[in-house]
Image (cartoon, rainbow, N blue to C red; front, top):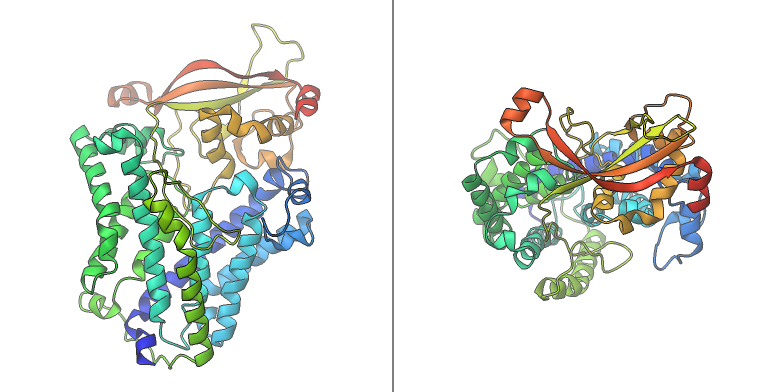
Length: 480
Protein backbone atom coordinates (compact mmCIF):
# COMPACT_ATOMS: atom_id res chain seq x y z
CA UNK A 1 0.00 0.00 0.00
CA UNK A 2 2.43 2.65 -1.20
CA UNK A 3 -0.36 5.24 -1.32
CA UNK A 4 -1.05 4.77 2.39
CA UNK A 5 2.34 5.69 3.87
CA UNK A 6 4.84 8.53 3.55
CA UNK A 7 8.30 7.27 4.64
CA UNK A 8 9.89 10.69 4.05
CA UNK A 9 8.00 12.02 7.12
CA UNK A 10 9.56 9.53 9.56
CA UNK A 11 11.64 12.20 11.32
CA UNK A 12 8.70 14.60 11.50
CA UNK A 13 6.67 11.90 13.21
CA UNK A 14 9.52 11.09 15.58
CA UNK A 15 9.94 14.73 16.67
CA UNK A 16 6.18 15.24 16.96
CA UNK A 17 5.59 12.18 19.13
CA UNK A 18 8.62 12.73 21.37
CA UNK A 19 7.73 16.42 21.76
CA UNK A 20 4.09 15.66 22.46
CA UNK A 21 5.15 13.15 25.11
CA UNK A 22 7.16 15.95 26.79
CA UNK A 23 4.05 18.15 26.80
CA UNK A 24 1.97 15.31 28.23
CA UNK A 25 4.61 14.83 30.94
CA UNK A 26 4.43 18.52 31.90
CA UNK A 27 0.60 18.45 31.87
CA UNK A 28 0.40 15.39 34.11
CA UNK A 29 3.09 16.79 36.41
CA UNK A 30 1.11 20.02 36.80
CA UNK A 31 -2.03 18.03 37.56
CA UNK A 32 -0.24 15.92 40.18
CA UNK A 33 1.27 18.94 41.93
CA UNK A 34 -1.75 21.28 41.86
CA UNK A 35 -4.88 19.14 42.07
CA UNK A 36 -5.35 18.82 45.85
CA UNK A 37 -5.92 22.54 46.38
CA UNK A 38 -7.91 23.06 43.18
CA UNK A 39 -10.15 20.01 42.72
CA UNK A 40 -9.22 17.51 45.41
CA UNK A 41 -11.64 16.14 47.99
CA UNK A 42 -11.05 19.28 50.09
CA UNK A 43 -10.24 21.55 47.15
CA UNK A 44 -11.85 24.79 46.07
CA UNK A 45 -14.01 23.00 43.46
CA UNK A 46 -14.07 19.39 44.71
CA UNK A 47 -14.33 16.61 42.13
CA UNK A 48 -16.78 14.50 44.23
CA UNK A 49 -19.32 17.35 44.33
CA UNK A 50 -18.93 17.86 40.57
CA UNK A 51 -19.43 14.16 39.83
CA UNK A 52 -22.62 13.99 41.91
CA UNK A 53 -24.29 16.44 39.53
CA UNK A 54 -22.61 15.45 36.23
CA UNK A 55 -23.37 12.20 34.35
CA UNK A 56 -20.78 10.18 32.46
CA UNK A 57 -22.09 11.20 29.04
CA UNK A 58 -21.30 14.85 29.78
CA UNK A 59 -17.93 14.19 31.43
CA UNK A 60 -16.50 10.79 30.50
CA UNK A 61 -13.77 10.03 33.00
CA UNK A 62 -12.32 7.13 34.91
CA UNK A 63 -13.16 9.14 38.04
CA UNK A 64 -16.85 8.62 37.34
CA UNK A 65 -16.35 5.07 38.65
CA UNK A 66 -14.24 6.00 41.67
CA UNK A 67 -12.64 9.11 43.07
CA UNK A 68 -10.20 9.67 45.88
CA UNK A 69 -7.22 11.98 46.10
CA UNK A 70 -4.97 8.96 46.24
CA UNK A 71 -6.49 7.50 43.06
CA UNK A 72 -6.17 10.86 41.26
CA UNK A 73 -2.50 11.01 42.27
CA UNK A 74 -1.98 7.47 40.94
CA UNK A 75 -3.52 8.43 37.58
CA UNK A 76 -1.51 11.67 37.33
CA UNK A 77 1.84 10.16 38.33
CA UNK A 78 1.20 7.16 36.08
CA UNK A 79 0.72 9.66 33.26
CA UNK A 80 4.07 11.22 34.14
CA UNK A 81 5.76 7.82 34.04
CA UNK A 82 4.15 6.71 30.78
CA UNK A 83 4.98 10.05 29.16
CA UNK A 84 8.59 9.72 30.27
CA UNK A 85 8.76 6.25 28.73
CA UNK A 86 7.56 7.64 25.39
CA UNK A 87 10.03 10.53 25.62
CA UNK A 88 12.78 7.95 26.12
CA UNK A 89 11.73 6.15 22.93
CA UNK A 90 9.97 3.10 24.33
CA UNK A 91 7.14 3.64 21.84
CA UNK A 92 9.52 2.82 19.00
CA UNK A 93 10.81 -0.37 20.60
CA UNK A 94 7.53 -2.14 21.30
CA UNK A 95 5.11 -3.69 18.77
CA UNK A 96 2.84 -1.30 16.90
CA UNK A 97 -0.25 -2.31 18.87
CA UNK A 98 1.56 -1.73 22.17
CA UNK A 99 2.70 1.76 21.11
CA UNK A 100 -0.88 2.60 20.14
CA UNK A 101 -2.06 1.31 23.53
CA UNK A 102 0.45 3.57 25.30
CA UNK A 103 -0.76 6.65 23.45
CA UNK A 104 -4.39 5.64 24.06
CA UNK A 105 -3.78 5.30 27.81
CA UNK A 106 -2.20 8.76 27.91
CA UNK A 107 -5.13 10.28 26.05
CA UNK A 108 -7.74 8.55 28.22
CA UNK A 109 -5.97 9.49 31.45
CA UNK A 110 -5.63 13.15 30.54
CA UNK A 111 -9.21 13.25 29.23
CA UNK A 112 -10.31 11.90 32.62
CA UNK A 113 -8.52 14.77 34.37
CA UNK A 114 -9.75 17.51 32.03
CA UNK A 115 -13.35 16.36 32.27
CA UNK A 116 -13.40 16.75 36.06
CA UNK A 117 -11.16 19.82 36.15
CA UNK A 118 -14.03 22.31 35.81
CA UNK A 119 -12.95 25.96 35.47
CA UNK A 120 -9.34 25.16 36.26
CA UNK A 121 -9.17 23.14 33.03
CA UNK A 122 -11.34 25.36 30.83
CA UNK A 123 -8.56 26.38 28.43
CA UNK A 124 -8.26 25.78 24.70
CA UNK A 125 -4.88 24.11 25.03
CA UNK A 126 -6.46 21.26 26.99
CA UNK A 127 -8.57 20.34 23.95
CA UNK A 128 -5.58 20.93 21.68
CA UNK A 129 -3.40 18.51 23.64
CA UNK A 130 -6.16 15.89 23.70
CA UNK A 131 -6.88 16.23 19.98
CA UNK A 132 -3.18 16.08 19.07
CA UNK A 133 -2.75 13.18 21.48
CA UNK A 134 -5.60 11.31 19.83
CA UNK A 135 -3.95 11.73 16.42
CA UNK A 136 -0.64 10.48 17.85
CA UNK A 137 -2.30 7.11 18.42
CA UNK A 138 -2.72 6.68 14.65
CA UNK A 139 0.69 7.91 13.52
CA UNK A 140 2.23 4.53 14.28
CA UNK A 141 5.80 3.87 15.40
CA UNK A 142 9.07 2.58 13.93
CA UNK A 143 7.30 -0.62 12.87
CA UNK A 144 5.62 1.22 9.99
CA UNK A 145 6.02 4.37 7.90
CA UNK A 146 3.84 7.36 8.87
CA UNK A 147 0.32 7.02 7.40
CA UNK A 148 -0.57 9.78 4.94
CA UNK A 149 -4.12 10.17 6.26
CA UNK A 150 -2.94 10.77 9.84
CA UNK A 151 -0.45 13.36 8.61
CA UNK A 152 -3.24 15.18 6.78
CA UNK A 153 -5.37 15.10 9.92
CA UNK A 154 -2.52 16.81 11.76
CA UNK A 155 -2.49 19.52 9.06
CA UNK A 156 -6.24 19.93 9.41
CA UNK A 157 -5.85 20.43 13.17
CA UNK A 158 -3.06 22.96 12.63
CA UNK A 159 -5.20 24.79 10.08
CA UNK A 160 -8.08 25.08 12.55
CA UNK A 161 -5.78 26.35 15.31
CA UNK A 162 -4.23 29.07 13.15
CA UNK A 163 -7.14 30.07 10.91
CA UNK A 164 -9.62 30.02 13.79
CA UNK A 165 -7.36 32.33 15.80
CA UNK A 166 -7.00 34.66 12.82
CA UNK A 167 -10.74 34.83 12.19
CA UNK A 168 -11.61 35.54 15.82
CA UNK A 169 -9.23 38.49 15.78
CA UNK A 170 -10.48 39.86 12.47
CA UNK A 171 -14.09 39.64 13.68
CA UNK A 172 -13.32 40.85 17.19
CA UNK A 173 -11.68 43.90 18.63
CA UNK A 174 -11.28 46.84 16.22
CA UNK A 175 -7.63 47.18 17.27
CA UNK A 176 -6.84 44.03 15.26
CA UNK A 177 -8.20 45.70 12.14
CA UNK A 178 -6.43 49.02 12.68
CA UNK A 179 -3.22 47.15 13.68
CA UNK A 180 -2.93 48.69 17.16
CA UNK A 181 -3.67 45.71 19.47
CA UNK A 182 -0.02 45.18 20.34
CA UNK A 183 0.17 48.69 21.75
CA UNK A 184 -1.51 47.01 24.75
CA UNK A 185 -1.37 43.21 24.54
CA UNK A 186 2.19 42.57 25.75
CA UNK A 187 1.29 44.49 28.93
CA UNK A 188 -2.27 43.21 29.48
CA UNK A 189 -1.90 39.55 28.47
CA UNK A 190 -2.78 37.00 31.19
CA UNK A 191 0.76 36.20 32.30
CA UNK A 192 3.63 38.28 30.91
CA UNK A 193 7.06 36.69 30.54
CA UNK A 194 10.56 38.03 31.27
CA UNK A 195 10.81 39.65 27.82
CA UNK A 196 7.29 41.12 27.76
CA UNK A 197 8.50 44.48 29.10
CA UNK A 198 10.92 44.72 26.16
CA UNK A 199 8.25 43.68 23.65
CA UNK A 200 5.86 46.28 25.06
CA UNK A 201 8.43 49.03 24.55
CA UNK A 202 9.16 48.20 20.92
CA UNK A 203 8.46 51.14 18.57
CA UNK A 204 4.79 51.44 17.71
CA UNK A 205 5.37 51.06 13.96
CA UNK A 206 6.94 47.67 14.73
CA UNK A 207 3.87 46.74 16.77
CA UNK A 208 1.74 47.45 13.71
CA UNK A 209 4.02 45.25 11.63
CA UNK A 210 3.65 42.51 14.27
CA UNK A 211 -0.14 42.61 13.93
CA UNK A 212 -0.02 42.63 10.13
CA UNK A 213 2.40 39.69 10.17
CA UNK A 214 0.10 37.86 12.57
CA UNK A 215 -2.83 38.30 10.18
CA UNK A 216 -0.73 36.96 7.33
CA UNK A 217 0.49 33.99 9.38
CA UNK A 218 -2.98 33.05 10.61
CA UNK A 219 -5.26 33.96 7.70
CA UNK A 220 -3.12 33.30 4.60
CA UNK A 221 -0.32 30.89 5.53
CA UNK A 222 -2.62 28.07 6.80
CA UNK A 223 -3.89 27.45 3.26
CA UNK A 224 -0.31 26.78 2.21
CA UNK A 225 -0.27 23.75 4.53
CA UNK A 226 -2.36 21.88 1.97
CA UNK A 227 -0.22 22.91 -1.01
CA UNK A 228 2.36 20.59 -2.65
CA UNK A 229 5.90 20.52 -1.30
CA UNK A 230 7.99 22.57 -0.81
CA UNK A 231 5.24 25.20 -0.33
CA UNK A 232 3.71 23.26 2.57
CA UNK A 233 7.07 23.05 4.34
CA UNK A 234 7.61 26.79 3.89
CA UNK A 235 4.15 27.48 5.34
CA UNK A 236 4.94 25.23 8.30
CA UNK A 237 8.25 27.02 8.86
CA UNK A 238 6.42 30.36 9.00
CA UNK A 239 4.05 28.93 11.61
CA UNK A 240 7.01 27.73 13.67
CA UNK A 241 8.71 31.14 13.55
CA UNK A 242 5.55 33.04 14.54
CA UNK A 243 4.88 30.63 17.39
CA UNK A 244 8.44 31.02 18.68
CA UNK A 245 7.85 34.79 18.68
CA UNK A 246 4.83 34.19 20.93
CA UNK A 247 6.86 31.90 23.18
CA UNK A 248 9.37 34.72 23.71
CA UNK A 249 6.74 37.37 24.38
CA UNK A 250 4.52 35.65 26.97
CA UNK A 251 3.34 32.56 28.86
CA UNK A 252 0.64 30.51 27.13
CA UNK A 253 1.21 27.10 28.71
CA UNK A 254 1.78 24.54 25.94
CA UNK A 255 -0.43 26.18 23.29
CA UNK A 256 2.50 27.43 21.22
CA UNK A 257 4.58 24.27 21.66
CA UNK A 258 1.84 21.89 20.50
CA UNK A 259 1.21 24.19 17.53
CA UNK A 260 4.94 24.06 16.68
CA UNK A 261 4.94 20.26 16.93
CA UNK A 262 1.95 20.05 14.59
CA UNK A 263 3.74 22.31 12.11
CA UNK A 264 6.77 20.03 12.17
CA UNK A 265 4.63 17.12 10.90
CA UNK A 266 4.20 19.09 7.66
CA UNK A 267 7.91 19.37 6.89
CA UNK A 268 9.15 16.88 4.32
CA UNK A 269 12.21 15.09 5.69
CA UNK A 270 13.72 14.54 2.25
CA UNK A 271 13.68 18.32 1.67
CA UNK A 272 15.04 19.06 5.13
CA UNK A 273 17.87 16.56 4.56
CA UNK A 274 19.13 18.74 1.70
CA UNK A 275 19.93 21.60 4.07
CA UNK A 276 20.43 19.81 7.42
CA UNK A 277 22.74 16.92 8.41
CA UNK A 278 19.93 14.47 9.15
CA UNK A 279 20.39 10.74 9.76
CA UNK A 280 19.46 8.20 7.14
CA UNK A 281 15.82 7.01 7.39
CA UNK A 282 15.38 3.61 9.04
CA UNK A 283 13.72 0.63 7.38
CA UNK A 284 9.96 1.04 7.67
CA UNK A 285 7.85 -2.08 7.05
CA UNK A 286 4.54 -1.95 5.22
CA UNK A 287 1.55 -1.02 7.38
CA UNK A 288 -0.53 -4.04 8.52
CA UNK A 289 -4.12 -4.15 7.28
CA UNK A 290 -5.63 -3.82 10.75
CA UNK A 291 -3.64 -0.61 11.31
CA UNK A 292 -4.70 0.79 7.93
CA UNK A 293 -8.31 0.06 8.82
CA UNK A 294 -8.02 1.91 12.13
CA UNK A 295 -6.41 4.95 10.48
CA UNK A 296 -9.17 5.07 7.86
CA UNK A 297 -11.83 4.81 10.59
CA UNK A 298 -10.16 7.64 12.51
CA UNK A 299 -10.11 9.77 9.36
CA UNK A 300 -13.82 9.20 8.72
CA UNK A 301 -14.58 10.11 12.35
CA UNK A 302 -12.63 13.37 12.10
CA UNK A 303 -14.30 14.25 8.79
CA UNK A 304 -17.74 13.72 10.32
CA UNK A 305 -16.92 15.70 13.46
CA UNK A 306 -15.43 18.55 11.42
CA UNK A 307 -18.90 19.77 10.48
CA UNK A 308 -19.29 21.74 13.72
CA UNK A 309 -15.88 23.50 13.72
CA UNK A 310 -16.30 24.45 10.06
CA UNK A 311 -19.78 25.82 10.71
CA UNK A 312 -18.39 27.76 13.67
CA UNK A 313 -15.54 29.27 11.62
CA UNK A 314 -17.98 30.33 8.90
CA UNK A 315 -20.39 31.86 11.41
CA UNK A 316 -20.40 35.59 12.15
CA UNK A 317 -20.95 34.58 15.79
CA UNK A 318 -17.77 32.48 15.88
CA UNK A 319 -16.97 31.08 19.33
CA UNK A 320 -13.47 30.67 20.74
CA UNK A 321 -11.98 27.45 22.10
CA UNK A 322 -15.05 25.27 22.08
CA UNK A 323 -15.25 21.49 22.14
CA UNK A 324 -18.33 20.06 20.48
CA UNK A 325 -18.15 16.68 22.19
CA UNK A 326 -17.18 15.39 25.60
CA UNK A 327 -14.10 13.64 24.18
CA UNK A 328 -12.48 16.91 22.98
CA UNK A 329 -12.13 15.66 19.41
CA UNK A 330 -12.14 18.08 16.46
CA UNK A 331 -12.64 21.27 18.47
CA UNK A 332 -12.61 24.90 17.42
CA UNK A 333 -9.83 27.24 18.49
CA UNK A 334 -9.03 30.93 18.78
CA UNK A 335 -7.99 33.45 21.40
CA UNK A 336 -7.80 37.16 22.20
CA UNK A 337 -10.70 38.32 20.11
CA UNK A 338 -10.81 41.19 22.62
CA UNK A 339 -7.77 43.01 23.99
CA UNK A 340 -7.69 44.90 27.29
CA UNK A 341 -6.31 48.43 27.23
CA UNK A 342 -5.40 48.43 30.93
CA UNK A 343 -4.24 45.71 33.30
CA UNK A 344 -6.12 44.93 36.51
CA UNK A 345 -4.66 42.71 39.24
CA UNK A 346 -6.20 41.37 42.43
CA UNK A 347 -3.75 41.65 45.34
CA UNK A 348 -4.38 39.52 48.44
CA UNK A 349 -3.23 40.74 51.84
CA UNK A 350 -3.44 39.34 55.35
CA UNK A 351 -2.90 40.54 58.89
CA UNK A 352 -2.27 38.76 62.18
CA UNK A 353 -3.82 41.59 64.19
CA UNK A 354 -7.05 40.69 66.00
CA UNK A 355 -8.38 44.27 65.91
CA UNK A 356 -8.69 46.08 62.59
CA UNK A 357 -7.88 49.79 62.62
CA UNK A 358 -6.62 52.35 60.15
CA UNK A 359 -3.12 51.52 61.39
CA UNK A 360 -3.40 47.77 60.78
CA UNK A 361 -0.35 46.35 59.03
CA UNK A 362 -1.28 44.24 56.00
CA UNK A 363 1.17 41.84 54.39
CA UNK A 364 0.93 40.76 50.78
CA UNK A 365 0.78 37.23 49.36
CA UNK A 366 3.01 36.65 46.33
CA UNK A 367 2.08 34.38 43.44
CA UNK A 368 4.45 32.45 41.22
CA UNK A 369 3.46 33.84 37.85
CA UNK A 370 1.02 36.71 37.98
CA UNK A 371 2.32 40.25 38.62
CA UNK A 372 2.52 41.25 42.27
CA UNK A 373 5.59 42.95 43.70
CA UNK A 374 6.41 45.76 41.21
CA UNK A 375 10.13 45.01 41.64
CA UNK A 376 9.84 41.44 40.44
CA UNK A 377 10.51 40.64 36.77
CA UNK A 378 7.89 38.21 35.36
CA UNK A 379 9.23 34.69 34.93
CA UNK A 380 9.01 32.21 32.10
CA UNK A 381 6.68 29.37 33.13
CA UNK A 382 5.34 28.00 29.86
CA UNK A 383 4.88 25.25 28.91
CA UNK A 384 4.09 24.61 32.60
CA UNK A 385 0.62 25.92 33.45
CA UNK A 386 -0.04 27.85 36.69
CA UNK A 387 -3.80 27.41 36.85
CA UNK A 388 -4.55 29.62 39.86
CA UNK A 389 -2.52 32.51 38.47
CA UNK A 390 -4.31 32.31 35.14
CA UNK A 391 -7.78 32.32 36.69
CA UNK A 392 -6.87 35.30 38.85
CA UNK A 393 -6.34 37.25 35.62
CA UNK A 394 -9.95 36.50 34.70
CA UNK A 395 -11.06 37.28 38.27
CA UNK A 396 -9.57 40.77 38.00
CA UNK A 397 -11.56 41.38 34.82
CA UNK A 398 -14.83 39.89 36.09
CA UNK A 399 -15.45 39.08 39.79
CA UNK A 400 -18.38 36.88 38.74
CA UNK A 401 -15.92 34.50 37.08
CA UNK A 402 -14.24 33.84 40.43
CA UNK A 403 -17.42 33.54 42.51
CA UNK A 404 -17.44 29.70 42.76
CA UNK A 405 -13.88 29.42 44.09
CA UNK A 406 -12.73 32.79 45.48
CA UNK A 407 -14.18 32.48 49.00
CA UNK A 408 -12.96 28.87 49.33
CA UNK A 409 -9.51 30.19 48.35
CA UNK A 410 -9.66 32.90 51.03
CA UNK A 411 -10.84 30.39 53.62
CA UNK A 412 -7.83 28.18 52.85
CA UNK A 413 -5.44 31.10 53.22
CA UNK A 414 -6.97 31.81 56.62
CA UNK A 415 -6.11 28.34 57.86
CA UNK A 416 -2.71 28.08 56.13
CA UNK A 417 -3.85 25.14 54.02
CA UNK A 418 -0.60 23.50 52.96
CA UNK A 419 -1.79 22.40 49.50
CA UNK A 420 -3.02 25.92 48.72
CA UNK A 421 0.13 27.62 49.97
CA UNK A 422 2.20 25.40 47.67
CA UNK A 423 0.53 27.20 44.75
CA UNK A 424 1.95 30.52 45.97
CA UNK A 425 5.43 32.00 45.73
CA UNK A 426 5.44 33.48 49.23
CA UNK A 427 3.31 33.11 52.36
CA UNK A 428 4.08 36.08 54.66
CA UNK A 429 2.74 34.37 57.79
CA UNK A 430 4.91 31.29 58.30
CA UNK A 431 3.30 28.62 60.47
CA UNK A 432 0.72 30.90 62.14
CA UNK A 433 -2.22 31.76 59.86
CA UNK A 434 -3.49 35.34 59.58
CA UNK A 435 -6.54 36.58 61.43
CA UNK A 436 -7.97 38.40 58.42
CA UNK A 437 -7.47 38.34 54.64
CA UNK A 438 -8.63 40.97 52.17
CA UNK A 439 -8.29 41.60 48.43
CA UNK A 440 -7.71 44.89 46.64
CA UNK A 441 -7.91 45.76 42.96
CA UNK A 442 -4.97 47.57 41.39
CA UNK A 443 -4.23 48.88 37.93
CA UNK A 444 -0.80 47.80 36.74
CA UNK A 445 1.29 49.17 33.88
CA UNK A 446 4.83 48.51 32.75
CA UNK A 447 7.24 51.20 33.86
CA UNK A 448 8.94 53.39 31.30
CA UNK A 449 12.66 53.02 30.63
CA UNK A 450 13.33 56.06 32.80
CA UNK A 451 11.24 54.70 35.69
CA UNK A 452 12.97 51.33 35.48
CA UNK A 453 16.44 52.89 35.66
CA UNK A 454 15.45 55.31 38.40
CA UNK A 455 13.28 53.16 40.66
CA UNK A 456 14.37 49.61 39.72
CA UNK A 457 10.74 48.50 39.28
CA UNK A 458 9.15 46.71 36.33
CA UNK A 459 5.58 47.69 37.19
CA UNK A 460 3.82 50.79 38.40
CA UNK A 461 0.55 50.14 40.23
CA UNK A 462 -2.34 52.30 41.36
CA UNK A 463 -5.05 51.28 43.84
CA UNK A 464 -8.47 51.20 42.16
CA UNK A 465 -10.86 49.85 44.78
CA UNK A 466 -11.54 47.25 47.42
CA UNK A 467 -12.12 43.87 45.78
CA UNK A 468 -13.04 41.87 48.87
CA UNK A 469 -13.46 43.27 52.43
CA UNK A 470 -11.45 41.81 55.32
CA UNK A 471 -12.70 38.32 56.17
CA UNK A 472 -12.04 36.16 59.21
CA UNK A 473 -11.83 32.38 58.98
CA UNK A 474 -15.32 31.93 60.45
CA UNK A 475 -16.91 34.42 58.06
CA UNK A 476 -15.12 33.09 54.99
CA UNK A 477 -16.18 29.54 55.84
CA UNK A 478 -19.80 30.52 56.42
CA UNK A 479 -19.99 32.40 53.11
CA UNK A 480 -18.07 29.90 50.95
